[in-house]
Length: 103
Image (tube, rainbow, N blue to C red):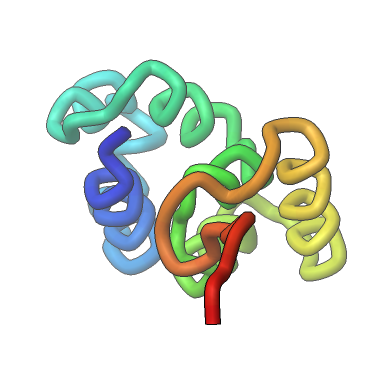
């Protein structure tokens, strides 16, 4: 998994109008510039917020990407919950769910 590249792309989509334009007009060319797995690529293209959350994408980045693809706040929250139900616990990153936490 290349969480760094997923987050880098989403951050740039959120911040840079030229990157957004390329995503709309030459998506395959843009995505080829990032070391993404097939699953990551599909989640980005499909706007699968739940899967991106489970992959470990930072919530600040994901929140803005969700808005960029037209989701309302309640849809964003519901998508993350549905992602955990469908794909299991968060796999990596800040929000990873620890099964056995020792004190």
